[in-house]
Length: 590
Image (cartoon, helix red, strand yellow):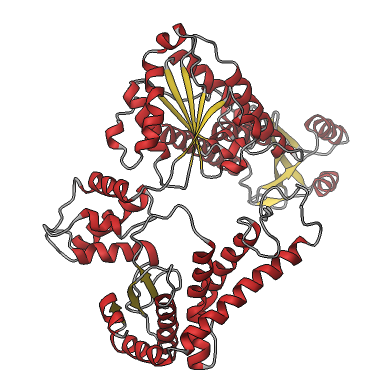
């Protein structure tokens, strides 16, 4: 409703400008609609030569209508610098014996108004532009919009699946909001803030709504970006209004999504940084200023907790920090059940199997998979969602849409076949890597000429050095196969190389897995202002160690494929014939 009102206001302002402009143009056109123009100096000369028969002027206007004696059928127009000076000049000419008829008309009320408006056009335009900017930026009478009926969330903990530990930790917040008195009597302070961090789509906003829904209190939500505007001071003003409104509605809950937009580390610099600092400072002041009888809890969500200012995270502000992880297999099954409740599935479909095939998926991604499956089933005119629909939906979400209409040359098909065969065969001989689920050379979205899917039925929270090194080998398997089988390499391995470089860099810089450097952490992206323990040549050291890991992985991939060249040629031939093969067909080769 707020967005519609803003759009309506802008449309009204624009229409008003257009109407005023049209009136001015018409009026000016009426005033200046003459047949010919006459220069002021030329008019004076013609008056001296007795060539002017009649001059018609309007009081308050500098525009004249002139009729010449030699041209009675023509009406000339002329703009004079001053009406008083020109009137005196005409009187002088008449006293000299020159016959000139001077007619002075009274100006109509309409033209008087138009003249005044015409002179005020620059000022009016400036006021309109400033008014539009103020309206769009939320100056004026803008405040935190809240409706006690529409903003009381109906989400409950039963609607949140896969976050059992997080819900248990947050249930006491519901008690704080419902019965603050019993905690105060015990001398316990109500926590002022809770920070939820985690990957996008893990359910941070949903669990915040569930807390307010379980407690039955108002739920005020704003995004961090809503505090940042063009004008300085707007962010701090909105923070004050937000907390004033929360105090009025106490007990209630404030939820600030993407708090890193205003809560990032304070720094000096230009006006934008200064205004962001002011907004953050105001947020810190408001969180410190809660009265003891105000039951207001602030929840915030971020995908990048490392970006937040340390002052936000100290006790007394965001007292608790909860990491919302991706769900395990049990949690994924529960999430799938919630999103499957309104969909029709074939009787032989087991959601547990889908949960096993989607390790690492967030709740939002699981919901998207089921929605895509329903869309595909509808498009294919199925009466129910089938295994094929679900499988295609998972592929669509993970590797993109199948490009069946794309014309691919035989050369590119052959290259893609050897590339994907290389990935699959190398992975087969690496103990820590997942089993191959499907191989295809049908082009997909994201620029992929094919793909190799693996059975990701294991939830991993820790990754060993051996596993990461073997992941590098698997990633380089495609490029190595191209080189060995075709004696050439292509751009198809660009994404593999990027991922391998990122993994190798993290192994050296973040996880202390370099034998030469040992357990040393080096910040490569953020906090570059910190003193580096490796000195000024850190980039050279990191680069050398990273390259050594990738080179080692390339040698290992080459050894595996060289020992299995017959399998590589055979698998590539099958892919060229069938385009897509399953895990059972792949395993028959071995």
